[in-house]
Image (cartoon, rainbow, N blue to C red):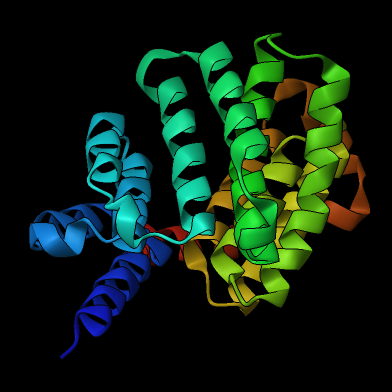
Length: 249
Protein backbone atom coordinates (compact mmCIF):
# COMPACT_ATOMS: atom_id res chain seq x y z
CA UNK A 1 0.00 0.00 0.00
CA UNK A 2 1.37 3.41 -0.98
CA UNK A 3 1.73 6.31 1.42
CA UNK A 4 -1.03 8.21 -0.40
CA UNK A 5 -3.40 5.29 0.09
CA UNK A 6 -2.50 5.15 3.78
CA UNK A 7 -3.18 8.86 4.20
CA UNK A 8 -6.49 8.60 2.37
CA UNK A 9 -7.68 5.68 4.49
CA UNK A 10 -6.74 7.52 7.69
CA UNK A 11 -8.49 10.69 6.52
CA UNK A 12 -11.62 8.82 5.41
CA UNK A 13 -11.83 6.90 8.70
CA UNK A 14 -11.50 10.09 10.72
CA UNK A 15 -14.22 11.76 8.68
CA UNK A 16 -16.51 8.73 9.06
CA UNK A 17 -16.22 8.94 12.85
CA UNK A 18 -16.91 12.68 12.82
CA UNK A 19 -19.90 12.33 10.49
CA UNK A 20 -21.73 10.14 12.97
CA UNK A 21 -20.71 12.24 15.96
CA UNK A 22 -18.27 9.68 17.34
CA UNK A 23 -15.76 12.33 18.36
CA UNK A 24 -14.12 10.32 21.13
CA UNK A 25 -13.51 7.43 18.73
CA UNK A 26 -12.12 9.90 16.18
CA UNK A 27 -9.72 11.28 18.78
CA UNK A 28 -8.58 7.82 19.83
CA UNK A 29 -8.09 6.80 16.21
CA UNK A 30 -6.06 9.95 15.50
CA UNK A 31 -3.87 9.43 18.55
CA UNK A 32 -3.13 5.88 17.42
CA UNK A 33 -1.85 6.86 13.99
CA UNK A 34 1.90 6.93 13.25
CA UNK A 35 3.42 10.40 13.37
CA UNK A 36 4.18 10.21 9.65
CA UNK A 37 0.49 9.71 8.91
CA UNK A 38 -0.66 12.35 11.39
CA UNK A 39 1.65 14.88 9.75
CA UNK A 40 -0.04 14.60 6.37
CA UNK A 41 -1.88 17.93 5.85
CA UNK A 42 -5.36 16.46 5.30
CA UNK A 43 -5.02 14.02 8.20
CA UNK A 44 -3.72 16.75 10.51
CA UNK A 45 -6.57 19.03 9.50
CA UNK A 46 -9.25 16.38 10.02
CA UNK A 47 -7.70 15.31 13.34
CA UNK A 48 -7.69 18.90 14.54
CA UNK A 49 -11.32 19.41 13.63
CA UNK A 50 -12.25 16.19 15.40
CA UNK A 51 -10.53 17.29 18.60
CA UNK A 52 -12.26 20.66 18.40
CA UNK A 53 -15.65 19.00 17.98
CA UNK A 54 -14.83 17.03 21.12
CA UNK A 55 -14.15 20.30 22.95
CA UNK A 56 -10.36 20.01 23.20
CA UNK A 57 -8.80 23.05 21.49
CA UNK A 58 -5.35 22.33 22.95
CA UNK A 59 -5.32 18.90 21.31
CA UNK A 60 -6.73 20.46 18.13
CA UNK A 61 -3.90 22.96 18.04
CA UNK A 62 -1.32 20.25 18.67
CA UNK A 63 -2.75 18.06 15.89
CA UNK A 64 -2.74 20.92 13.40
CA UNK A 65 0.81 21.91 14.30
CA UNK A 66 1.97 18.47 13.11
CA UNK A 67 0.97 19.24 9.52
CA UNK A 68 3.93 18.94 7.18
CA UNK A 69 3.35 21.96 4.95
CA UNK A 70 5.99 20.75 2.50
CA UNK A 71 3.48 18.09 1.46
CA UNK A 72 0.57 20.54 1.25
CA UNK A 73 -0.89 22.18 -1.81
CA UNK A 74 -1.25 25.95 -1.87
CA UNK A 75 -4.93 25.55 -1.05
CA UNK A 76 -4.27 23.23 1.87
CA UNK A 77 -1.70 25.64 3.27
CA UNK A 78 -4.26 28.44 3.13
CA UNK A 79 -6.93 26.35 4.85
CA UNK A 80 -4.50 25.29 7.58
CA UNK A 81 -3.47 28.93 8.08
CA UNK A 82 -7.13 29.87 8.53
CA UNK A 83 -7.81 27.03 10.97
CA UNK A 84 -4.68 28.02 12.90
CA UNK A 85 -6.01 31.56 13.12
CA UNK A 86 -9.43 30.31 14.24
CA UNK A 87 -7.88 28.24 17.02
CA UNK A 88 -6.63 31.44 18.63
CA UNK A 89 -10.25 32.21 19.47
CA UNK A 90 -10.85 28.86 21.14
CA UNK A 91 -7.50 28.79 22.91
CA UNK A 92 -7.23 32.35 24.23
CA UNK A 93 -10.20 34.39 22.92
CA UNK A 94 -7.71 36.26 20.74
CA UNK A 95 -10.40 37.43 18.33
CA UNK A 96 -8.66 40.53 17.00
CA UNK A 97 -5.49 38.54 16.32
CA UNK A 98 -7.50 35.79 14.58
CA UNK A 99 -9.14 38.35 12.27
CA UNK A 100 -5.76 39.92 11.53
CA UNK A 101 -4.12 36.60 10.72
CA UNK A 102 -7.05 35.41 8.62
CA UNK A 103 -7.00 38.53 6.47
CA UNK A 104 -3.21 38.36 6.15
CA UNK A 105 -3.37 34.73 5.02
CA UNK A 106 -5.70 35.66 2.16
CA UNK A 107 -3.67 38.74 1.28
CA UNK A 108 -0.51 36.64 0.98
CA UNK A 109 -2.11 33.69 -0.83
CA UNK A 110 -1.49 33.00 -4.51
CA UNK A 111 -5.10 32.81 -5.71
CA UNK A 112 -4.05 31.55 -9.14
CA UNK A 113 -2.47 28.46 -7.57
CA UNK A 114 -5.53 27.57 -5.45
CA UNK A 115 -8.59 25.69 -6.67
CA UNK A 116 -12.00 27.39 -6.34
CA UNK A 117 -13.09 24.72 -3.84
CA UNK A 118 -10.02 25.14 -1.62
CA UNK A 119 -10.45 28.91 -1.77
CA UNK A 120 -14.12 28.53 -0.78
CA UNK A 121 -13.22 26.22 2.09
CA UNK A 122 -10.68 28.73 3.38
CA UNK A 123 -13.30 31.47 3.00
CA UNK A 124 -15.73 29.39 5.06
CA UNK A 125 -13.28 29.32 7.96
CA UNK A 126 -12.58 33.04 7.56
CA UNK A 127 -16.31 33.80 7.72
CA UNK A 128 -16.56 31.76 10.91
CA UNK A 129 -13.87 33.96 12.42
CA UNK A 130 -15.54 37.17 11.24
CA UNK A 131 -18.93 36.16 12.62
CA UNK A 132 -17.35 35.58 16.00
CA UNK A 133 -15.60 38.94 15.71
CA UNK A 134 -18.84 40.82 15.00
CA UNK A 135 -20.41 39.29 18.11
CA UNK A 136 -17.63 40.86 20.17
CA UNK A 137 -17.70 44.14 18.23
CA UNK A 138 -14.24 43.63 16.75
CA UNK A 139 -15.61 44.33 13.26
CA UNK A 140 -18.65 46.23 12.04
CA UNK A 141 -22.07 44.64 11.77
CA UNK A 142 -22.03 45.47 8.05
CA UNK A 143 -18.83 43.49 7.52
CA UNK A 144 -20.30 40.62 9.50
CA UNK A 145 -23.49 40.63 7.44
CA UNK A 146 -21.55 40.65 4.18
CA UNK A 147 -19.48 37.71 5.42
CA UNK A 148 -22.60 35.78 6.41
CA UNK A 149 -24.26 36.30 3.02
CA UNK A 150 -21.11 35.02 1.32
CA UNK A 151 -21.72 31.59 2.93
CA UNK A 152 -24.49 30.70 0.48
CA UNK A 153 -22.18 31.02 -2.52
CA UNK A 154 -19.41 29.24 -0.62
CA UNK A 155 -21.78 26.34 0.05
CA UNK A 156 -22.69 26.09 -3.64
CA UNK A 157 -19.04 25.98 -4.69
CA UNK A 158 -18.22 23.30 -2.13
CA UNK A 159 -21.27 21.20 -3.02
CA UNK A 160 -20.37 21.38 -6.72
CA UNK A 161 -16.96 19.94 -5.80
CA UNK A 162 -18.69 17.20 -3.77
CA UNK A 163 -17.36 18.54 -0.48
CA UNK A 164 -20.67 17.83 1.16
CA UNK A 165 -19.55 18.07 4.78
CA UNK A 166 -18.01 21.49 4.25
CA UNK A 167 -20.94 22.72 2.14
CA UNK A 168 -23.47 21.75 4.80
CA UNK A 169 -21.28 23.24 7.52
CA UNK A 170 -21.33 26.54 5.63
CA UNK A 171 -25.12 26.43 5.45
CA UNK A 172 -25.33 25.59 9.15
CA UNK A 173 -23.25 28.63 10.07
CA UNK A 174 -25.42 30.76 7.79
CA UNK A 175 -28.67 29.49 9.33
CA UNK A 176 -27.40 29.95 12.88
CA UNK A 177 -26.53 33.59 12.22
CA UNK A 178 -29.76 34.73 10.59
CA UNK A 179 -31.18 37.76 12.40
CA UNK A 180 -34.88 36.87 12.47
CA UNK A 181 -35.62 34.02 14.93
CA UNK A 182 -38.44 32.54 12.84
CA UNK A 183 -36.36 32.58 9.66
CA UNK A 184 -33.47 31.05 11.61
CA UNK A 185 -35.58 28.16 12.89
CA UNK A 186 -37.06 27.52 9.46
CA UNK A 187 -33.60 27.47 7.85
CA UNK A 188 -32.23 25.10 10.50
CA UNK A 189 -35.09 22.62 10.08
CA UNK A 190 -34.77 22.68 6.28
CA UNK A 191 -31.02 22.14 6.57
CA UNK A 192 -31.56 19.18 8.88
CA UNK A 193 -33.65 17.49 6.20
CA UNK A 194 -31.02 18.18 3.53
CA UNK A 195 -28.30 16.79 5.82
CA UNK A 196 -30.29 13.59 6.38
CA UNK A 197 -30.76 13.22 2.62
CA UNK A 198 -26.98 13.38 2.28
CA UNK A 199 -26.47 10.91 5.15
CA UNK A 200 -24.85 13.45 7.46
CA UNK A 201 -26.53 12.71 10.82
CA UNK A 202 -24.12 14.89 12.79
CA UNK A 203 -25.14 18.04 10.91
CA UNK A 204 -28.80 17.02 10.90
CA UNK A 205 -28.76 16.54 14.67
CA UNK A 206 -26.94 19.81 15.30
CA UNK A 207 -29.40 21.69 13.08
CA UNK A 208 -32.43 20.14 14.76
CA UNK A 209 -31.13 20.73 18.25
CA UNK A 210 -30.32 24.34 17.46
CA UNK A 211 -33.83 24.79 16.08
CA UNK A 212 -35.30 23.18 19.19
CA UNK A 213 -33.28 25.49 21.41
CA UNK A 214 -34.69 28.46 19.53
CA UNK A 215 -38.24 27.14 19.89
CA UNK A 216 -38.07 27.01 23.66
CA UNK A 217 -36.70 30.52 24.12
CA UNK A 218 -39.46 32.55 25.84
CA UNK A 219 -39.39 35.31 23.21
CA UNK A 220 -39.78 32.78 20.38
CA UNK A 221 -42.16 30.18 21.82
CA UNK A 222 -45.48 31.87 21.04
CA UNK A 223 -44.43 32.95 17.57
CA UNK A 224 -43.13 29.49 16.68
CA UNK A 225 -46.33 27.77 17.76
CA UNK A 226 -48.34 30.31 15.82
CA UNK A 227 -46.49 29.63 12.56
CA UNK A 228 -48.08 26.62 10.94
CA UNK A 229 -45.21 26.13 8.49
CA UNK A 230 -42.82 25.15 11.30
CA UNK A 231 -45.28 24.01 13.95
CA UNK A 232 -43.48 21.33 16.01
CA UNK A 233 -45.38 18.08 15.40
CA UNK A 234 -44.73 14.78 17.15
CA UNK A 235 -42.97 13.57 14.02
CA UNK A 236 -40.45 16.42 14.42
CA UNK A 237 -39.80 15.45 18.02
CA UNK A 238 -39.35 11.81 17.02
CA UNK A 239 -36.94 12.83 14.24
CA UNK A 240 -34.86 14.88 16.66
CA UNK A 241 -34.83 12.07 19.23
CA UNK A 242 -33.89 9.44 16.67
CA UNK A 243 -31.12 11.52 15.16
CA UNK A 244 -29.60 12.40 18.52
CA UNK A 245 -29.67 8.78 19.65
CA UNK A 246 -28.14 7.50 16.43
CA UNK A 247 -25.47 10.18 16.43
CA UNK A 248 -24.30 10.37 20.03
CA UNK A 249 -24.83 6.88 21.38
